[in-house]
Length: 117
Image (cartoon, rainbow, N blue to C red; front, side):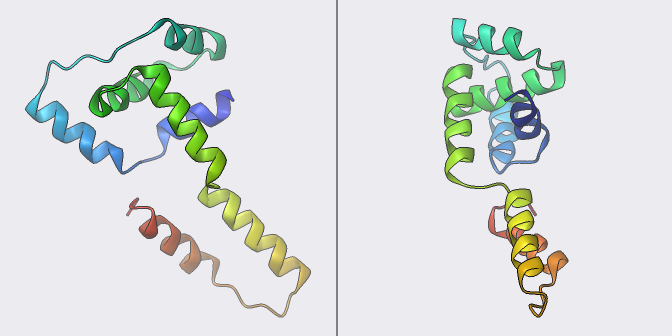
């Protein structure tokens, strides 16, 4: 779980554009750090940069930090990461070496489709 939270915060996300916009127009918006968020940060010993990103994203989303994190973890559970998808394609190609997959092109297309590039 700690690894997932760190990856979630350190990977660019489309919500980061919203974060920048909100911070430019409402610079004093503070995140709601609820008791569950404190337990989350303490239990998983989240690095300061990760905690900061999660708080900024929650504030921009106008939800409590624990609610934001819960929603993102649920989203990740429903939708595999790009790395998970790439790994799965690698397994498919290993099972059928005749498949010609341009992994760099697929990776770039996935990032584009998710609004990361």
